[in-house]
Amino acid sequence: MNRRVRSSLVRLVVRLREYLLGCFRVDTRSLAVFRIFLGALVVADVFLRARNFSFYYTDGGLVPQELAREYTAEYAVSVYYLTSDSTLIAALMGLQVLFALALIVGYRTRAMTVVSFLFVVSLDHHNPFVLSYADTLFRLLFFWAIFLPLGERWSVDAVHRDRSPRRSVVGVATALALGQMVFMYVLNGVHKSESALWKSGEAAPLVFGIDEMTFLLGDVLREFPTLLTYGGMLWFYMLLGAWLLIFLRGRLRVPLLVLFVGGHLSFALTVRIGAFAYVAIAGLALFIPTAFWRDGRRVCQRFDVDPDGVVPRDRLRGFARPLPAVQFVPDRYAAVKAGVANAALALVVAGLAVTVAVFVLNAGAVVADGGYDQHRLNHEVAEAPGGEYVHVAADSLGIVQPEWSVFAPHPRTTDRYYVFGARTTDGERLDVFNDRAFTWERPGNELQTQHDTYRERFFMNSIRRSGSNDELPANLGEHICTTYEDDGVALSHISMFEVTERITMETINEPDERERETEHFYRHTCDT
Image 1 (spheres, rainbow, N blue to C red):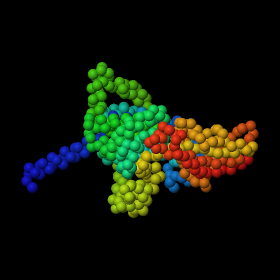
Image 2 (cartoon, one colour):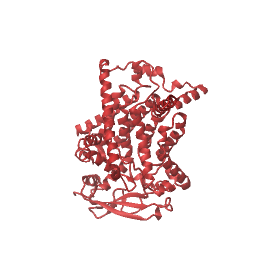
Image 3 (cartoon, rainbow, N blue to C red):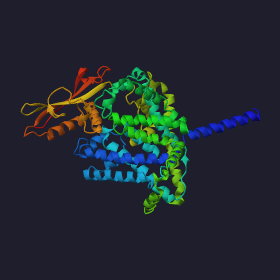
Image 4 (tube, rainbow, N blue to C red):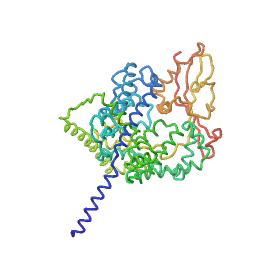
């Protein structure tokens, strides 16, 4: 090989390396936005859960601690397991909010990220029956956040350091955090590709026909099935091409990023699926390129707007300086602290390496009949040498990757509502779930109003899947029996039914014309 060819190869390798580093480079302003999102979502989640505090999070409610522990990993991490006193549990939730507020302002950011992550995991383990994919994604993003310098900019820590912040960072941690979002999108797209309904675009109109989930603008958009068809096809192909979020850089990344953010905002306004849209947008914040911030500054200057006014430095300094610059680890041990952090990241990478190796060696089992089986992969990892520790640690922290099969491979084509047939001691028949006389008819066109909160919908999913011998529906039945009041008349028994409606393209807006099926899933006898 002559010198010219060798030189060309060296230049090619250098350019490729620079290109790849650029793909995984994260602007520190984007990191700051990500940090603020994480903290704000924790605060919002705690306050939203507090609406059903006694019902879901105390031993006097439907999910006592003993039952929660039965349905979580053997070594599940939860500070809420330290007490069963409702006052102390409420105090822990308040403490979780305080740590999240410290994370928002970037005070002792790394420590607050770790502690907040542990509290998020703890609260999820405290009641595993109200969780969704949003909670899973949130835990995973929070876990990767531990290894990111979230306090580099727009933070109390940055003021205390009193040095110019780095413009951007790149490394294994940024690659893992960005890869999390892309992995979720692409895997969901692969699952959806198994369904002809997603490829044809019919899936989206059918999903918007689910009255149990749609709300706000969702009821309006279902009147435009053609628009939903093209929108669904666009989203499907965006998922398959989500890897471009990494490999498109600078301004080229912005249009695709806007499409994804716009897609999630549309979900937030149309489908009642909890915090998933906001958690995903938090993860997408990491993809905001430096070019966006640079162009934003120029636009602000053109309109005589001070871009530094968005995050007033003087006000931030005034807020930060009175706060003590507490150091949990003195500067002389900085090398030890960095070593511990690198060792922890190395263990994570080693765990991922075990998972990848198991996937490659067992590809035939993990990918069978055209589908991806995450449960089989988890089993194979647990059986591999050293894999048991990886699986136990991930399961304990709630960071096992799910199949990401949201509305996949086939979209949900059934609507659902509940009828709890009950008989009173004087012989009257009632539907106590909908507070009406007994009937199989719909309790209204907006079925999502059956549930006071979106977490109640997930809780009811857990109830109907539990089986006739499970403690969870028994607790719900007994709760209804003891809280029912009607001039001294009590309930004698409750029969819980699920009514499903088959959604077709012709009945999206015609629920009365849908085929219905009724399934009994639990009967409870009241102690009268």
